[in-house]
Length: 234
Image (cartoon, rainbow, N blue to C red; front, side, top):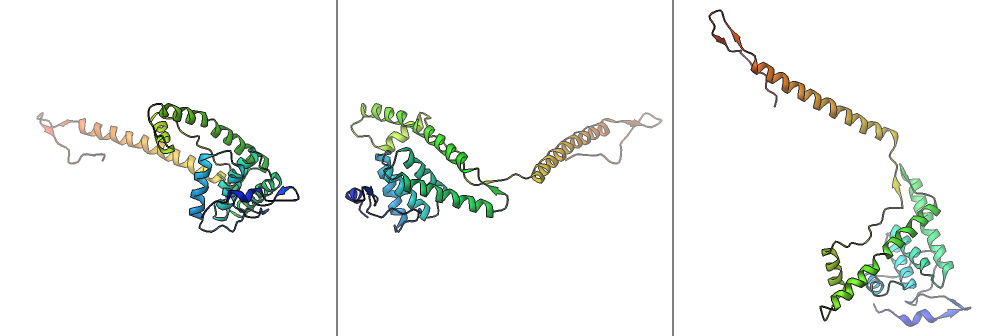
């Protein structure tokens, strides 16, 4: 599949109607792209080169959603919004569509929930800002390597950053979560109590075993009497 960058210039009523692949913008995140794995690989490669390409994030979000990756698609739309995509109306509709779908999923699942929309989107925005703080370190590392090597690629830069223990931000899950209900707390507390009782009884039995082994008895002639049994704790 070849990317058609010229498609993004097509406009209707002074508003861009197609993405850079020439596909009409849809309010829903669904897309008619085929061969998802191939498309995703090329989109990721494109965004590695230019992570400020807002339309690339919208297209990747559509691909992720259509292939069942709902929560990551929300991140893509949020990134496109932060980059001020030229069709903010379409981006907002997609964000609403994905969140509403996650909300319905959480409501239909036992012991699952998702925070209010403003909370979720605010948390993702903060995570994206933290992720962006990693970029200056990447560019600096790349510049340092270029001074020592003629050719430097992304894999080489990533590897060197890992060697120096400079890692990308690991975001938290702000999507659908499971509820820890009261009876789960009670089971956990009961487990702790049983563990404490087990440890105490183990110590008591060991001490009792040592006491029996140390006890000595003698008959009237002063000869040691050996007991017929000993208690061993295994």
